Length: 166
Image 1 (spheres, helix red, strand yellow):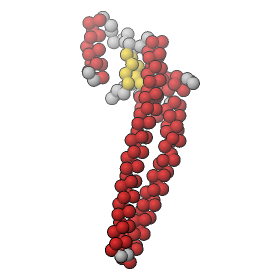
Image 2: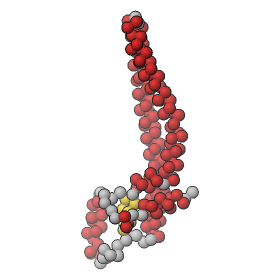
Image 3: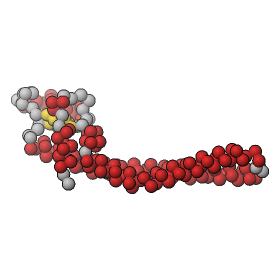
Image 4: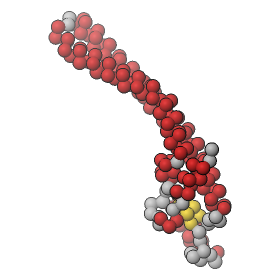
């Protein structure tokens, strides 16, 4: 069931329970902001950059070398024998194929690690949200709503609580 459907169902049941809208305590958390602004998320991003920075630089260097080799081939091509031209062209194609394979592997590895680090941030944020929910006796805390009032936005509080943790 989607979040919207659950929310609508919850509001439909409210009149039956005798709870008025005035008594309902609702909070909203912008997950995207939590992921961008919390120290935990920033530390995870720095960790990923350190972990993948060297490979990314190697890929950029390899791409630059391939481009330079391609330009040199274009320049030298008219003066090369047919056999030498074919050999160098094959080398360029193989190098390009190797570069593309390494780029795909890099992207897959980086995405997997990004997901792992993001999962840690999300789990910790969810624990903080649950603590706030229980402490302040919220009836409902939503994440990622289409429209919301700043009055019910507790995102900053979640970020501050995450940042206070060690």
